[in-house]
Image (cartoon, rainbow, N blue to C red; front, side, top):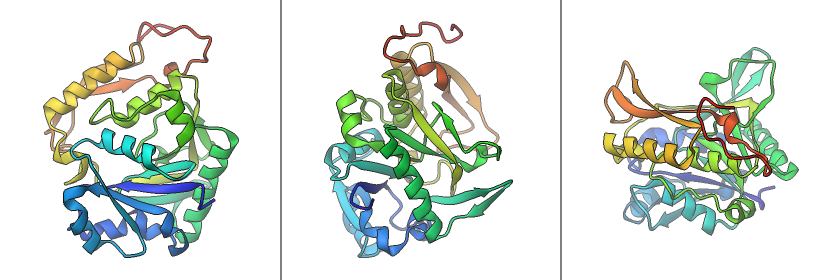
Length: 273
């Protein structure tokens, strides 16, 4: 398995954050850390090199201020059959009945095995549930739903499909998932496992350039690229989110409607069948 799947962690503007070492890196056993690669911009390479352990791979990417282009660059340059993307601030849980237990290093290997198994079964994109929404202990997975922050791809099949990350500077993972679903590739999101973010929209990362205009433009483009399944809405939160203030232009996505077998006609209305 280690030779077939690589874990890639894009990071930006967080080389001085002590908590980054308590992110996904703290859950990954040393035996697998050679499969882990942090991807940073060229102008931050030295800073991250001084911060990360020497046994972790670090590469510089020619793109900055555009996570979509960074992810596409990773896909096109990865040397693994499968690529697992992880945000740099995650911690993981395992469901045991009605409880979610913290994942230790041995459990992380089991989680990676489960993801690998689904990729080997033929799923082109595989995700793990977000802890905040992992409340149902009666199911072990869902099909054709949102994937974000921790997900894996069959590199060759994604590249062959024509689906790309770099059409959008943010919401690029939504665009990728929707495109693959529309092309007839089901996804699976595992509910035996879960991830949680340290803080959504924290300093660094996409928050460093995801201004209100960028967010609104991405929402409109996503709706244009996926008519009938993406609806633009104005959202308001009690606290500031990702540097956008309390109000932002966002989207509601009908994930299951996006999936269509190859002989199914395109959807033309968000509320239609």
